[in-house]
Image (cartoon, rainbow, N blue to C red; front, side, top):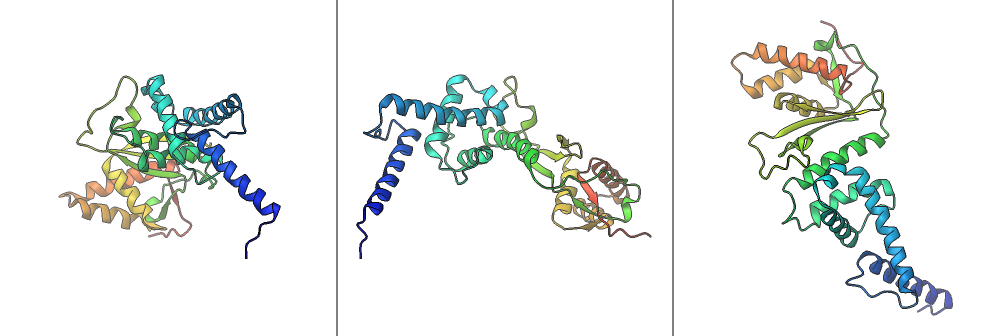
Length: 262
């Protein structure tokens, strides 16, 4: 049985009008304007919506904007605005939606090969700055060898093909170097977001810690030593312990309450 009440007709008409309105706002070149709205008003609406999106992109991806000329940046924003349907109504999610667009919807044949990695690197700072997890307190790692440790929820180990932290208008690599770039990004007790370039060994230590809820320091060091099959394991253990102490001092890793004494 069909409901032909005026309320149902108005609801259907409103939804259709809403879709017509949003389609034109997103992509006026391929969608007709609503017939009952003045063109000048539609142009004003579109400029207002697009400028909001553009301001969020500019604030969160300043390096990406800096390496593009005005036309390239405008066209990038227009393409995102036209193609991507956001899953979240919150403006704070726009940078994350932009990453999704770059990865899944962008025709990047003419883009810099590092564009997605650079955008991700810039997004991380914003994401950590607004993350709701609690920042760990600074701890004394003197007894670290016999403690259980975990990765701070506000510390992210990252691996990139390109040295994204060095990219600027004066440094635009065309090919990825042989050695990947390893970073850890973290928010400290002063709520400042910091980026540190780390070695492959440090990155692997953080991976091992991340794979466990808690892990004994000696077990972590033993695993990385076995993986490296180094002829001098004592040197790797000593160097790894020093790395972990420095990470603990920066609150990148935290000491659990389940430490044991030898």
